[in-house]
Length: 241
Length: 241
Image (cartoon, rainbow over all chains, first blue to last red; front, top):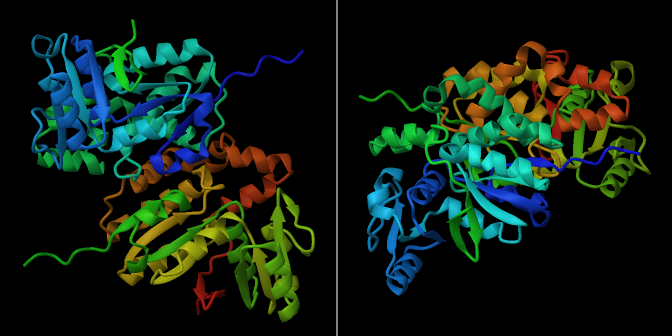
């Protein structure tokens, strides 16, 4: 008798590489650390009823009006014209967001989410909910693809580091035969003692710093401050019960 | 007065991402460490007149016949039917290859080379000629893209490590604002004290090991044993004078 094959754990560092992976037979984790998936878990942790991710500002305005929901999204670091709120997790405290529906438009994360629509299950991950993500993945016994949203298809450091952190935590439950996973793992091991310091060298850090968002970055790199699991169901992200 | 802007140094980890880079205004280094670009510099170092990289076995046979040249290439780790030699650098010692023309077909490296055809200049790089590559790039004052051939568009470790080694050596001459370059640099720093040992975890190592090619891998990871600069001129790779 041979031992049962463990499911595979792979990392996809850019949406432009997702076609190389077997999405249909995998759980896909959407990773957009700065800041979409950090904000998503934070809003759900603080009691948001659901979050509807949409691609365009127009769609956001339209659905927001239909549902009487909160609309949010940024373009080039500013709240997009026509929307009410931005991408910062600090805009969604419990006394504001509890019980409400948030319609959120982000460029990189939403694109990847739509590309992964045939997956067994889509969830979102970031450092604020890393334990919830890892516990879920380890328990499912399914193949996993950690999908980095990247920046306009360019590989970015923050999403890669989060993928590496997840690999570090759960690899013993999986068969890992993927050089992107090995790369992410090694990068996380090299950076983990000072993630924020290491991230200072990254391109997106420099972009966001110009907008005065270092507090956001620090939060988005901190584990388990909003430890809930966002699951995509019928196009809406809800907290797993 | 502002200081003159240094040229940019970027890393492209897969041919599927090359469209995101400004190829036309850059020197592109084709990197296919296991084993095409290691074999290319070795054959030129040992006196080959030139190397003609082609995409298909048929083209290889055809051009080889036309020129009376040596034909070489592998598919799935074996010499492809119709060709005479394989991809191992050890097949091209001086007493065999000096003065001759080699027509070489490889899948990943040749594909990238054709995709980069509009570059200012195309060169090939691998550990056996790393110093020649770095000296050339540092002296040109041009933008540089380190282009990893990868494995069927999947990011691979050996090409990433070589890109990181080049970044480590020449970054002070460039403006490096590219998370893939930062990732490659960090990976190389983590692995450099035992490249061969680190590579044991990589997917391609395992693939080649099954074919008994550990000696090849060790050679392909060793710096400066064939320190010549292959330049693409009119579709042919020749040693820079």
